[in-house]
Amino acid sequence: MDVISTLPDEILCHILSFLPTRTSMATSVLSCRWCYLWRTVQVLDLNDRFCYNHERSSAGAHERFLAFLQEFVPLLHSVRKFHLDLIPRATSKPKLWKLYFSPSVDERSRRWYMRSDTLVSLVLHGNIYLHNVAPGEITLPSLKNLDMCVFSLNLGAFLYGCPVLETLRASLDYKIKNNLALVEHLALDSPSLEYLNLHLWSPCAQILVCDYPNMLKACLDIGAHWSKCDWLPKLLQALCKTKFLRLATSTTMGLLHDAPVLDLPDFCNLIHLQLDFEYLDIRVIDMLHNCPKLQALKICICERVPGYILHRKDHASNVWTQPISIPNCIISHLNTVEYQGYQNTAEEQEFTSYILQRGLVLKTMAIHANFFSECKKREIRKALSKIPRGSIMCRLKVD
Image (cartoon, rainbow, N blue to C red; front, side, top):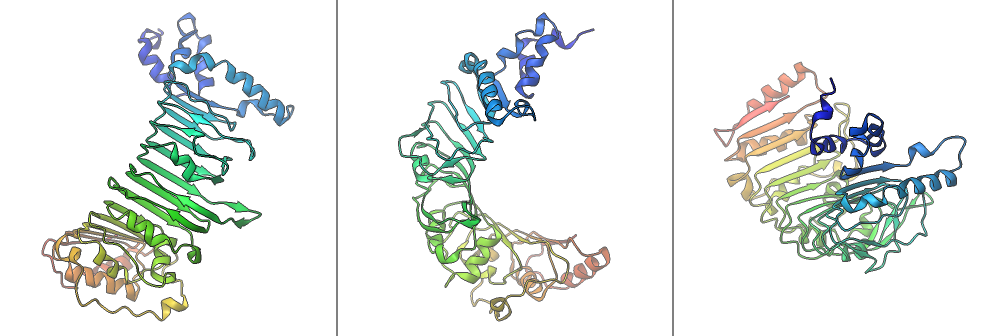
């Protein structure tokens, strides 16, 4: 008995929306009931893989897919989500809300023009070159979510056409002949931003930022070209109202080692801080002076064989002196500390001891010693358990 065909069209279309469009189209041969059902699905998920084979040239495959796309032009008026995986050309029709665009064709000289009054979410991944975009060529007045992983980008000109953008994830890693290209100017002038995830591994000469009063979460992965990153304190100052901050390994290590001084703003609203390291720098405690309301701190160390520590000249000569004044957050707000990749080094023991003894409101200290045997973990747990605790509520976990 064909039970599924008795379901209402709305439910069947919802089911088909999770399938690639070509698979959805294939259901038209099942029966008259299914013949035109796929045409009312409000999600298009198209790619060009079926067009390529050893008998057809790339140009021929390209032309065939373009002809295939023409079949869907009449349907675009009702589409809500469009996932296109092929060519560097995208057209947003009046009711389009979401667009995923991932081209497989490398066309650096193509000009980009994108206009849509209703597009809310846009994902651009792959062989996309947006360095020659000019202000006015991108007009997306309703766009709130932008996810970009592209080869080159004039970010300022792109964001100029996105006045209400709330979420930005940008991965910029420009390469020219196996060398990282210099980004002359990076503009992040989007005052409505609430979420920022910036991956930048090309040296950048200067940056334009603004005040981000609604910032909730910021993640920074800035490459190790610190001679070209003297603008980083300016970016951190602009993000000082965020509630969640994550600094990737290169960013954290650069701040503590390669920057002339530790120049941080006061993160007055910060409640969750994640810092990634190659190896722990005990001066992370000094950073907490700038986070007066911090409630949760997470330290993540790159996973290595136990006992292997990346020795550097500046690290070997660095001796941390306990601050005269204890960071305010440790006394009054910090209730959760998580340490991922614990190696049981002297620096880590000193850090753990400092937090346990001075954390007056600490509730949980979680130590993840991933590479150690259960026997070694018991030894670590026993040693840490002997440290006096400033909070009677503190629970120590070692796994």
